[in-house]
Amino acid sequence: MTGRVRVWLVVLAKFAITFGLLAWLLHSINWSELLLHISGIPASPLILAIFLLMALVIPVARRWHLIVAALGGSITYFSALRMVLMTVLINQSIPSNLGGDAYRVVATSREGMPWMRATLAAIVDRLMALLALAIVALFGVLALLDYTELADHRLLALLGTGFIVGGAVVTWLFFRSRFAAELSDKFDILRRLIDALSALLHKPANSAYLVVLSIMVQCITIAVMCLVVINTGLKVPLLPMVGVCALGLLIARLPVSFGGWGVREGTLVLGFAPFGVSREAALAASITYGLTELAAAIIGGILWAMLTAASDSKSGQKRHVL
Image: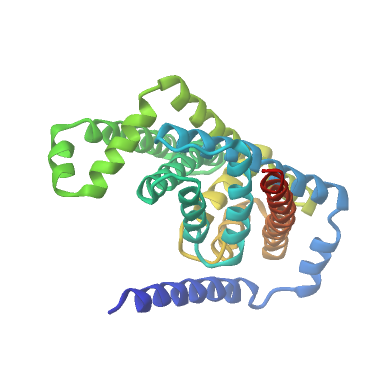
């Protein structure tokens, strides 16, 4: 099987999962109730949600700028901002987050950074974002478990905490072990990844700053989803609402569907069901949030085009002067 065939099979699988889940969720629902929930959302919270999602490109671009610098690259924050704007638009347009990462790799390599180091920077950035979301989602799920009737919910909470913390410690010990060093001699990509992480961890203050930035991004994203949920009219206590939204965002980030559609809706439907929320109301909240993400990405794409045109015009004027 060729690489191109494999890629197309993955794309088709994601389309099948996305539309299969949406078809299952939308089957036998009250469409009038669904549209009533969506149309009843005030405009001002939606505008605020879109603005907050757009504002997230500022810390995300800062994280990308610092990671590239830590791995030996040299790009301006303005360039990092433009890259992130286009990355968000691409990730909302194609059935894989890898498209946005590929764009950043190409754009960063054009700025003079070797493409392998740019690829490693994208991998590190993705891992850091997922780790931050997992940490935030963990605390949200712990709050959700406190509202369940599971007798062992505290044990599950401890196991979840131990899994994430233990996984982080084991990963850190692995990359510092002799075994990893021996493997890196055989696998060049592993050696490069170890070198990249070592360069990033060389300055603990910068690493902590990157983690704080990542956690802040995830907290704001969850807050935006909760804002949409509240204004959709769902009557759910705040802490379990945060837990369901955090879990929905975490699952939506898994590369199994088109832009997280389908899996996010399924998570919110199942997560809010124990609180008496109808399928129509949960779907309305999730669909509305997905549309706010799409709107923010489109506006970001327009902003990218304006910034790129301004940058090209400025570069042209400099060449004309010279």
